[in-house]
Image (tube, rainbow, N blue to C red; front, side):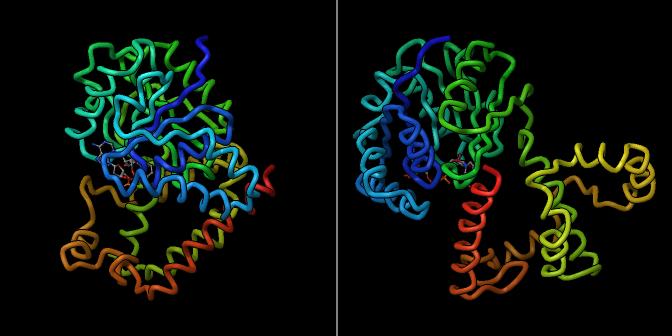
Amino acid sequence: MPTINRIAVIGAGLMGHGIALACARAGFDVTITDPIPDARISVKTRIAESLSLLGIGKAEIEAALEKIDVCPDVREAVENAGLVFEAAPEKLALKQSIFAEIETYAPQDAILASNTSVMPITAIMSQLKDKGRALGTHWWNPPHIIPLVEVIRTAETTEDTMATTIAVLTQAGKTPVRVEKDVPGFIGNRLQHALWREAISLVERGICDARAVDTVVKASFGRRLAVLGPLENADLVGCDLTLDIHNTVLADLERRAGPSPLLEELVATGRLGMKTGDGFRSWSPEEAKALREKVVTHLRRLEQILD
Ligand code: NAD
């Protein structure tokens, strides 16, 4: 398996800064670039802030920052990289053009990975000359705290590319999971949005309000999800009980192919959630800030407990 020492990150936003941070903390040399000067100027400060929020001391923060080189362009960022993580905006044509540029300047054996949330990797990589070294690596937000990275193979990704990427991610302290077929949403977002579809439907059908949906999840199965996956749970309660439940409940679950009209109406009327103050619920800026902070604190504590 090739040894990878240098990792390039393309896009220094929310995900890019966290991916760079995770790789640098694991000891990799990291290059990062972004076309927006402000993003390049601020990225090291943002990384230091994120590390500080994790309770990391000054010396360790300095050591991580020393491993990171902020580059003026893609060419400089990728020219000596063994693996490139692209974390640019979720637009197909943009990602395709970024990968064309990466392929021009990166070493011929460098692995090329996209961090798209849901777009088919096959489409993003369709114009590459060598598609065998291309794949998806779906990190979760915040990427330096959530362990999972889904590693998505296209019909053309080689096994060497998969294995080397999984080895690098493991070395970076992540939990890589193989996704053997390039389906929209991979594994995690398919599961998550199957739940969200039913959650929205419950409100739309007047069965309960949004707060009740969230309370039910948080006060029940949400509590065990970090240690008990759904299929472990099915085995735990018994596949026979699971079958009985499915025979009764599945026919009544939401199965509309497209988005909910309730969600479409919220968006059409500018109720976009915390950023506009209204969504499924109303949010003051203080409430939104408190919830964001609670998530980070919870994830940190959970990490300590599970470790
Ligand atoms: P972001 O907007 O925070 O960051 C994107 C960065 O890309 C910005 O700094 C922007 O200046 C930069 N950029 C713009 N054009 C570029 C170009 N041509 N080349 C390189 N960089 C460019 O977005 P984000 O949340 O970090 O998302 C990045 C990717 O990660 C998207 O594909 C997104 O779907 C995916 N993703 C996001 C999340 C999340 O929760 N935010 C989770 C998983 C995956």
